[in-house]
Every structure is written in C-alpha cells, then in structure tokens.
Figure 1 (cartoon, rainbow, N blue to C red):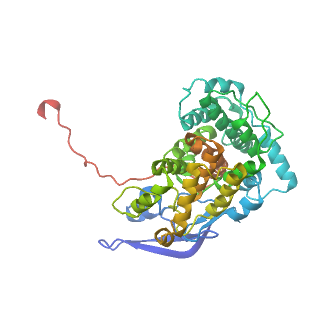
Figure 2 (tube, rainbow, N blue to C red):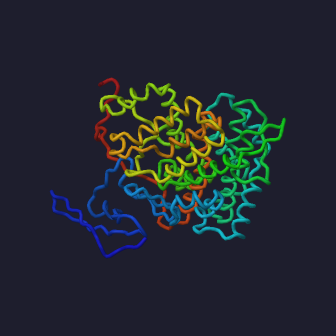
Figure 3 (cartoon, rainbow, N blue to C red):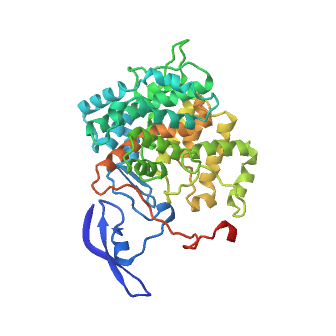
Amino acid sequence: MTKSAETVTLTDNQTGKSVSLPLLSGSVGPKVADIRALYAGMGIFTYDPGFTSTGSCRSAITYIDGDEGVLLHRGYAIEDLAEHADFMETAYLILHGELPDAAQKKGFVKDITYHTMLNEQIASFFRGFRRDSHPMAVMCGVVGAMAAFYHDSIDIHDPHQRLIASHRLIAKMPTIVAWTYKYSRGEPFMYPRNALSYSENFLHMMFATPCEEYTVNPVVARAMDRILILHADHEQNASTSTVRLAGSSGANPFACIAAGIASLWGPAHGGANEAVLHMLAEIGSKDRIGEFIARAKDKNDPFRLMGFGHRVYKNYDPRAKIMQRTCHEVLNELGKHDEPLLQLALELEKIALEDPYFVERNLYPNVDFYSGIIFQALGIPTSMFTSLFALARTVGWVAQWGEMLTDHDQKIGRPRQLYIGAPRRPFVPMNKR
C-alpha cells in the first residue's frame, strides 16, 4: 500500500469547513480514501451499513474484481491454481505468500499430516452432544474447545506458536468435520491415515468403516481437492471479517476460528449450497421447472433461484466454470446422471444458461450450485454442506488472522454508529410517572 500525493476534499456545505483526505493505492484495484482524520477534522463519521464501501484492513492475500470475474490468491488466478495445483500447494501459498518448491511442499505436507490426529479426550467431548445436533453447532464447540487442549499454541505474540496453531487448525479440521458426520450417524470414528493425501484422508475418515477396506476414488478425491481450493479464501467476507474482529481483541486462534465458523453458519453466508438442494426439493420434478422459472422472473414473487448469480461477481463467478466441469466428471465417474434430483439440477442449469432473462442479467450457476450437486452425488447430507465450506475456508481464516496480527496499523475493532435513540433526558422517579 502506498500513500500517493493525491487527495480528495470533503466540504461541509453548511459551514464551509473542509478536510483533505489522502488517497491510498494498492497493487491493483481502486484507490481508497484514508478517512482516519475525518472525525478530528470535521467532527463527523461515515455511515456504511455492511461496510460495503469501506476498507477495514490492508491485505496481500486475496484480490477480487467482481465486475471482471477475477479472483487472485497472492497474484495467482484461481483458474490456474485449481487446474495445476493441489490444496496443499494452495494452502502454503495463501499462508506464506509464494508457491512452495519441492522441499518446501514436502515439509509442509509432513507438518500438516502429523497434526491430523485429535487429542483422544476430544472424542469424549463429542459424546456430550446430541446425535441430532447441527454439525456447525458441534464444530463451534469442538474448535473453540481446542484452546483447552493445545495450550502450547495460544500465545499470539509468539510467531512459532502462531504457525503451530495455524498448522493444527488446517490439519485437524478434516478430522473434526469427518467425526461430526460419523457421530451424527452413530458410526465409529475413523482415525487419520498418514499415507493418504489431504483430500483422500478426509474422504476416508468420512466414508470408511472398521469393518472393511475402503479405497478412495481418485476422481472424487481430485474433485474434493478442487472444492477446497475454490473455497480456500474469498477476501473480507462476513466470516473472515469476524475472524479478524475477534482476533483484534487478542483472542486465541481457536476462539477466532470458532467465531468464523459461527458466522459462516448463517444462511446468508455459508448456507448457499444447502439452499440449492432445498430449492431443488421444492421444485420436485423437471415438469415444474417452467413454473419456478416464471416465479423467479416475477418481481412480486419472493421465490429466487438459489445458486445463480453472485453478490460479488457481477459478470461471472470464475470458480463456477471449474466447478461445472468437476461436477460432470464426478457424475460421470459415479454414474449418477440419472438420479431424479440430479437430473432436475442439470435441466435447471441448461435452461438458465439459455434463457435470455438469466443470460442478460448474468445470473449464471455459481460455485454453490455445482458444489451442492457434487455433495449430493457423494451422499453427503445437506446439513453437512456448510461444515465442508468451513473445512476449506480454514486456511484463509488462519492466514488472514496471522496477517492481521503483524499489521502495524491494526487496532481492536470498534465500529462507530449512527445513534437514533432518545437524546439525554431527565430521570423521573416512579411516584411521579
């Protein structure tokens, strides 16, 4: 970030008082007005609900240009990472800023692999939950409780402890998610296997049982790896901002990531692919698609096609094209194109890609539409979808958390407000009211 000689001037049209605000320039993207002197100079704050026009931090991790459909991690296009890298390479890049060489990747994979086991007492902690608990509720509890088990990595001022905490969270999240699934089904927990890759290990813990050997399908493993890459980080979204805000108070890393999981749990954020499956169930059959397409076009009808368009990407979601191809690869491999719900999804995709109403408005199927179909094909229940999102996003959360702690501009988060309550007034005793 550089401070240019350019400024913008804000003038109070009533008093004529002005303040000059410097413009800051990043490596790419629009310039940013530095408003830190605004209150001192003018006695006013900005009002920006949702912070949609406010830069809350500076970051070198992820860049998004929603108008052009661009998503970069450390300068690398998401399309290139999903096509040519695996999740461990991408995680290293997001954490450390550069792609690893062969030795660095080998060391990183070893570090992650040997942190995948959970403290055995955590298995007992799982058993304190009801079997029908929502998976995200279980994850919030278990991840937050990790601070009680891993005392040697909660000193946020120690760079080594921060790194160990980051490795532990990335490594143990697949185990936590898989155990959450197993617990909900009353099945025995499967322990990590160090000979398997990150995605293979996760799938093995999800679907294997002690009764017989389970071989992970390589097409499915590669698809899962791509899903993790495509969801690894997405700039300052709600859950990432939550992690940063929690971290700004000096909270331990496990509490910060648990806060991110809680934020992701909200249906407006992490529940989009789950909403896709609920929508498909509501439509029910292919012969009703026309009815629901008409409802989606009706401004007076609250129904919306879930999994189409994106709040950030006004042109197209660059992740969706990769996920579309991956989705069809998985369906072909598993021979599941003929399942009624998946047939319905594919027919809806076809119509939406050809209908002028959706084409003109860039309402293309997004990454959530295709990931929901893949999870359905794999037999993963919809209640688990957001947990898989959390698994992928953990690397972005810990990278953003670590970056925040080393930013010399960082302060504890304390947004201002526009107060609309009663002004100061005298207290009236009870006997006089």
